Structures are given as structure tokens and as C-alpha cells.
Figure 1 (tube, rainbow, N blue to C red):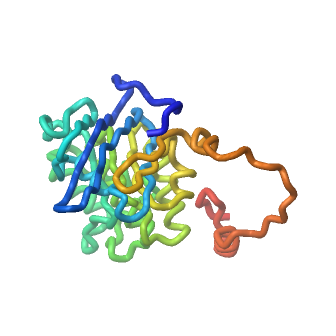
Figure 2: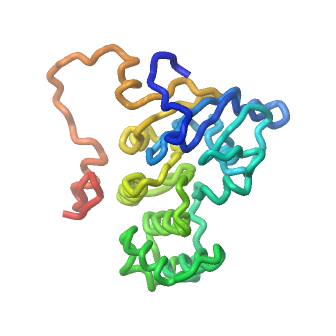
Length: 266
């Protein structure tokens, strides 16, 4: 971890704390002493290429894998010794939407609420449909949803029971530009409501757009961990020069489909 950057204190304000975490599979060393701190109510982006160890770290934090060494605490609970408490504190959304395409969006949410033995499952489902702008689609079979709608429903299902911490493992992989913007907006709404979000991604613009803090994981090690401004400060100061800026492909796409950068329709 780069020295000199601000690090959140390990106290009640810290939702996730990882120290010296290692994990190997046969001869492959996936995690080589990972340290991170995630503040409550923040969006923390874990940025890295395929094979960097992002998903392995998320699986350890969500008690799906055991670390070889090191320690990790989630919501104040030790992932190794208090796994049940950790699982009650979190929700995990994987790289592919885990929704039932035969059921409607509302029925998917009700099913999860009933599996968690929650009362007023219908009311909870309606609230989440409204929160994620899916009310009009709630009575439709999920098989008719777009990729962005499925992912938003998947995230909504993760929030049944209001877990304080949610892990999003590459939530926009394979989505088109409009769907990505829909998911970005949903993630920002989660954090604004007080949910702590640990987001793994290989997209630089996604981390830049969403995260309060960014850690770059490379070959099982954290290279840097800081705010976007702190990471920018690692490079020489920008020169002021006149450059004729051409529209990006994203600019062209959003202009043609009538969407703004925030995902709103013109």
C-alpha cells in the first residue's frame, strides 16, 4: 500500500477491515498480503485486471472461501470465527444476475423476502421496485427485461432485509452503455442511503465515476489505495495546452439514443 495516503481509522466508522490476507490455489498465489479499509456508507472500488484476485477477495469477505493467513472483519465480525454474523450483515451480487426469468420482477423480490422470513413481503417488494425505477415492469416476466433492468433487479434482491454492506462483483460486465449508466445510478443511490458498497471492476471509468476510494489490486497485491485526487497526484501535474477534443464514442452513442451522461432520457 502506498505510504502517505490517508487511511480511514479502524473503528466503528470502518465497515470492512482486511490485514495481511493471503490465498493460494495449488501453485498459484492469488492474494499476497492484502490490506484494505472501507469506511461505512462509502463506495470502495477494487480495481484490477482479470486474474488479479478481486473475486477471490470478495469470496473470502463473504465467507465463501477461507483465507490461508491474515485477518478480515466485516461489520465488526471476524470472517473466520463469526461467519454467521458476517453473512447476516452482507449481501453479494455476483458477475451474472441471479434472477428467475420465469417469475415477474415483483415475484422475484417476494420470493427472496419469504426465504428470509420477512413480514410484509409484498410491501417490501413494491418499495424496492419503486426505489430502482422498476414499478412499471414489476408485473412483467423477468425474461422480457433488458440487461440493465435485470441487473437493477438483482441488486434490489440483494437489498431485501436491508443489509448494511453489499458486495458487487463486476456488476456491469457485459452490459451496454445505457445499462451501465442505470447500474451506476443504482449504486450511487445505495451509498446515499447509507449502504456500504465494495465494488470490484476492471473498468477504469467505472471506478473513477463511482468510488470514494479506489484500490488497485495487481498480482495479488494492493499497489495503491486512496481517493481519486490522491491517485492523480501520483503523476506529474497536468500541462495546460489547447487540444481540440473530439467526441468520444460514448458521447456519440448517448447523443443518438437521446440519453444524458446521468442516464436520463432527453
